[in-house]
Image 1 (cartoon, rainbow, N blue to C red):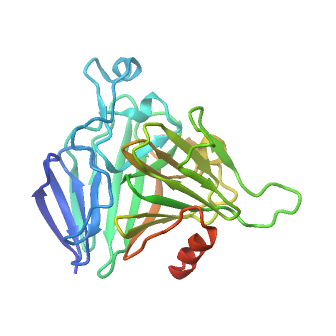
Image 2 (cartoon, rainbow, N blue to C red):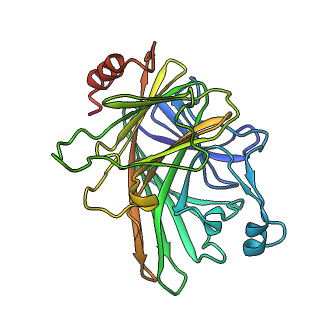
Amino acid sequence: MVTFKEKSYKNYGNCLEISNGCVDLLVTLDIGPRIIRYGFCGGDNMLYEDLDRVNTYEKEDIKEMFGANAKWYLYGGHRLWISPEYTETYFPDNNPVSYDTDENSAIFTCDVQEVTGLLFSTVVTLDDEGTGVNITHMIENCSGEPQTYAIWALTVLDKGGVELIPFNTNDTDLLPNRTLRAWPYTDFSDHRLYMGNKFVSLCSDSTDKKFKLGFDLRYGVTAYINKNQMFVKSFNHYDEGEYPDNGCSFETFTNNCFLECETLGEIGRKPDGSIVAHNEYWSLYKDVSIKDPRDEKEIAEIFEKYELI
């Protein structure tokens, strides 16, 4: 049975707790929203919490667009954004959030964003039993004119773990079978990165250096092992879809604080009044560890054991 309860959590203020007795999630109500916690009941939180609010964005472009006092906060946890990443992406979502519940689901809705005219909603549906969570992200264009964007769902995970990403393995004969995109600060010699034949692994540690990669992730699944647990995120990738950042349906980013596991919807022109949606499915496993993130055989055994691909 899924229960809902408002409670105060650390310095995030009022939150909604969603629990089925196996796992619980906390969603912020005074800010965001952010899914700020996901973990086994009484266990560790897999998500990063920016309790000191050290990750912010307050450059001149955001002040010019949203006002002299505008300041965007990462906060941590899971958030909904728009891609590609430009000033409008950094709307300062620091206001209260409304919500409704229905059976196993809670829907969280913000006010229409100033300047962009977009309305963000997130539906969190927890399975009656086990760890499964379905998250539906929705954006409605209320601006009065067409806009071009894609839904961007970012899960900010606590540092100290290893992310596992499967390469595309489809046989395309003489043509390439995968897209790999790098950002200007991406260093392929970074010790945190391993690129093998069938898998990529990315470690998250205290290295004070940014790293980001993008993929056309046909398998639509990635895993993050940390705290003797494994967080798995899955989503739909469409082979014929048009994706942001030159074809990326999945992106990952890490720095000295956290690792982001990011999925993207299709990019395109959205008419006024249109609503687009993007789904993710989360699951969590106990007693999972990895000895060597550069051992493809070990990674393959993990994916096979948990039937991830």
